[in-house]
Length: 391
Image 1 (cartoon, rainbow, N blue to C red):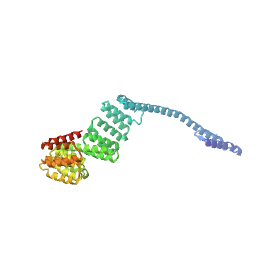
Image 2: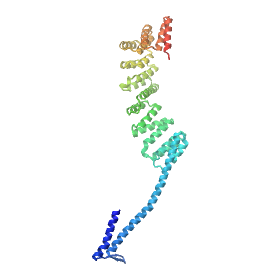
Image 3: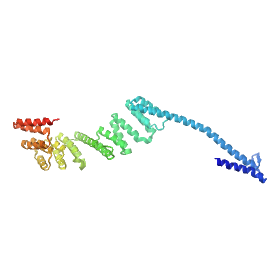
C-alpha cells in the first residue's frame, strides 16, 4: 500500500511539474449534453487521482460501518453458542448424576444456537426414556436425524439400544437388522446385535455375530466360548420344543463338519435327544463324537442312555479303554455295566476309575455293590471315601 502511494505521488508530481517545465500544459474538453468542461491535462489528472482517493475513502468508511455490524452479529452468535455450550455441559452433568428431568431440560436448551445439536438430542432421548417418556424419546431421535441426516448410524444405534434397554425387543431386532443392511458390520453395531440376538433367541444370527466380533478382536476367547455354548443350548432347546428329535438331527446335520463333533456342541445336543427319548439316535452321535475325541462331557452323556441292548456300546468303549487310560472312561463303563446288570464288570471298572481319580459318585456305586454282597465293612469304607470327597 505504501509503495502504491509513493508511485501515485511520483506520477502526480510528474504530471504537475512536467508540463510546467516543458511549457505545454495540454487541453481537455468534456461535453455531456448542454454541459461542457474545459481544463488542462494537469488539472484533469489531479482530479482523477483525487476522485480515486475519494473512492478509497468511501470504501474504507463503508467497511468500518459494515464491519461493526458484522462484529456485532458475530458477538451475538458467539454469545448464543456459549450459552448453548453451558446448557449442554449442565445437561451432561445432570445425566451422569441421573437427574434426568434436569438433563432433558438443559440439553434441549443447549440445542438453540447450536449447529451441532446431534449429541444433545441423542442424550435427551436417553433422559426421556429414563423418565418413561417414550414418545418424547422418539421425537428427540427424529429431530436428531433431521439435524444431522448423515448421522443415521449414530441415531439408529441409539434408538435400537434404548429400545433394547426398554424391553422393546422386536423393535430393537428390526432396528439392528436394518442398520446392518445399510452400514454393514460396524463394531458398535456388532456389540449391540450380540445383546439383541441373545435376548430375542436369534441363535443362528448370534453365532455369526460372535464369529465377527472375535475376528475383529472385540470379544475375548473365553467370553466367546461361553456365549457360543449358551447360544447352541438355546438353539437346541427351541428346536427341540418346535420340531422334536427330527428337528435336532436336521439341525446337527446342517452344521459344519468342524462344529458337529465339538464336545461343547454335541453333548448338549445329545442331552436334548435323550430328553426326547431318542436314545438310539443319541447313542449313534455320541459314538461318532468319541471316535473323534474321548471327551468327558460325551462320556457323561452316555451314562444317561436307556437302551435295550448295551452290548454294541460297551464293546466300543472297551476297545477305547484298552488304548486310553481315562478315569471318566472307566467310570462310564462301570455305570453302563450296572445298567446292563453286570455287577462284576461294573465293579472292576469303577475300582479302576477311583484308582486313577477318586470320585464321590463312583465310591457310592462301589458301596452299593458291596452292600448287595453283604460286605458292610467294605461298603462303609467306600461311603467314608465318598463323604471325604463330597463338596
